[in-house]
Each structure stands twice: as C-alpha cells, then as structure tokens.
Image 1: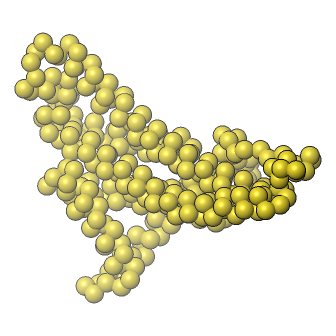
Image 2: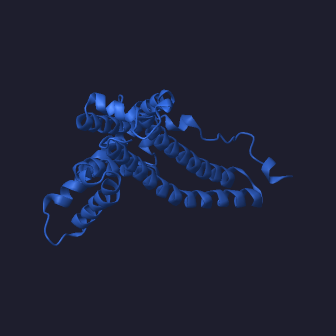
Length: 260
C-alpha cells in the first residue's frame, strides 16, 4: 500500500492559514502581538540607553554596536536619500529601523516566533508616522500651496500632460505611499511566517503520522527546509525593515526638494 495512504484515519493535517495569526488574549485584551510590541520597545530603548549611558572616546562593545548602527543609518540611508539635511532625521530613522528589526525578527526567536508586523495595524501606524513627517516637512519648506503645486505640476513636464499627471502624483504621494509601505511589510512578514509554519508543522505531521520510509524522508526534508527557510526569513526580515526605512527617507528627501 502506498505510504501516503497509511495516515491514521483519526489524524488529519490542517494546513496553516490566516487563522494562525489570530491569538487569543493572554489576559484581558492584551494579546501576543501587543506583548511583542512592548518587548520590542523595551529592547530598543534599553539598547540605546545602556549604549550611551557611559559613552567614552574608546567605546565598549555595546557602544561600538550602537555607534555602528547609528552610523549606518546616517551614512547609508539618511545621507544618500536626503542629503546634507538628512542628519536631522537620523534619530527618527535609526529608531524606526531598530524597532522594525525587533518586531520582524521576533518571528524566528523562540518562544515568541511571531512577527508582530504581520498584523497590518502595526506597519500602518508606522507608515502614518512617516507620512505625517514627509508631508509636514514638505509643507513647511515649500508652503502649503507650493508643496502641492510642485508635487502635482513638476517643472519640465508639458502642460498638456498635467490633467493626467496631477491626480496620479497627488494620489501617489498622499494615498498610495503609506498604503504600499504598509502592505509591502505586512505581506512579506505574513507570507514568510506562513511558509515556516507549513514546513515545520507539515514535517512534524509526516514524521509522526505517516508510516514508512516515504513519510520519514518527506518529513525530514520538510523540517530541514524549514530550518533553511528560517535563516532566509531572518534575512528577509532585516531587508524589509531596511526597505521601509529607506523609502521613508526617500519620501522625506523628496518633500524637501521642489522637483518630485
């Protein structure tokens, strides 16, 4: 008999789905994603606090790590995307990157093993903060009318194109940017976590409930693939945090210039 048909009739594999992202309250209204947000906030705050509490000319390991992280955001994100004025926004961008790394990487850290940013409300809230900042600095720099005029009617474009270009530019800047920031991060974290669940749970099911060499081999391969995917997902989590912050910096830099 085919080994795939020897699964115990009382056992059935339930593939992971969106329901696996809904956690019952730990107590009252406090859920696991909320716990991860609180822990991430505390970890980021503690990291920068203890790194800078006794700063010295010759840095210790923690100070060196914090300075390296801050320098990376300043030189590789703020300076490249915003320019000379980018130094003013480094504290926000560095905090945002550290916070996103903490929330994303929680998806592969036992016993948390859940990326809080797979819940759409969290990336949306962070995207709205970036949205407020880049629109505010743009209006402050160019004036309310000047900001939207330069946005919708960029120089060098034939006036005949304005009826088509103006609404596209307005929707892109005011509506689509925070939406794409939110969805890009949310869907990447959602899909990655779902793949890990499928590999680990599917592999466990094959090992425990499918008899024979086929079940053992397929289960072992699935578990091994899940381990490999865990490292790959960690890379994706770091990359998506970087992309979110880089795009936020690009939007700020664009708002500070007259030509978008």
